[in-house]
Length: 386
Image (cartoon, rainbow, N blue to C red):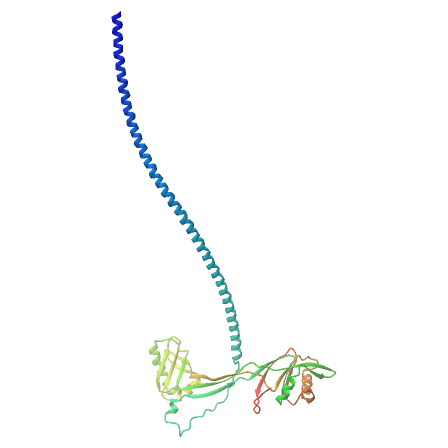
């Protein structure tokens, strides 16, 4: 029993030693693992610390860049605000300038419209609406002794006409025009602000006024009428232009129809007009008096014929002013008949005691009549009279 027990104890010791060696080896192995892990962790730690330092540097740089960006942003914002204020100031200036231009444009348009209105009025004043009656005109030819041979054929028929507009005054109802024989009488009457005229059993007050006439014009019209050229019109477009010229030349060359030898023919197909030039004068004058001429085209056609002339406006003159011997009586009340009242006015202003004098003419009209009074130039004193 003792041997068995002793042997078991020894075995137990051996097994215990073996277990301790295994544990020691296991411990060493674990120690090596932990050393390796520690070294690895230390490497990771060192790497992380390095990365942290790198990131800190990057963060610092980023912070610095961000601060710089913030400063740049603030600077840019300030510059933008300054630019915006400048632009707004410029916009306000341009708005004011534009408003000034619009106001100036409106003023210019108003002035232009006023000028146009004034121009229309002036054109209306200087337009002469008059039907000139037919008048026999005697044409005087040059002296035969001084006239060279062939001049009569080459020279056109020339005429000079003088157009003179008579000065006029629009006489309203309740007004009168008086022309005295002497200027001094008219001047004396105009110095009186109001004249009391006896009219049957009462009196009426009239106001003498100076007359301001509208401008009158005088000019000359120089007219040259061709002796050889004849204007044709209303020519129908029924054939080509060259063929039409030939037909016109043949038609106007026939003496049996009043024509003559043709020098040349001009024709415009678009307007249906043309010009025929004869070699000898005299043919044109006789054809112009007819007004129409028979032309043989595909059929016989009547075309209009007329003179060819040139005219010039010369010596255009305007006259304005106040007549020296004629005055206007205004604010006349219709107390009696028109003729009786005119007689009372004439009697009153003939009396020297009323600062009057001899009257050349007088005209009074009652309301609501309107009369256009024309003033003519006196041949003796070169003054205006009714």
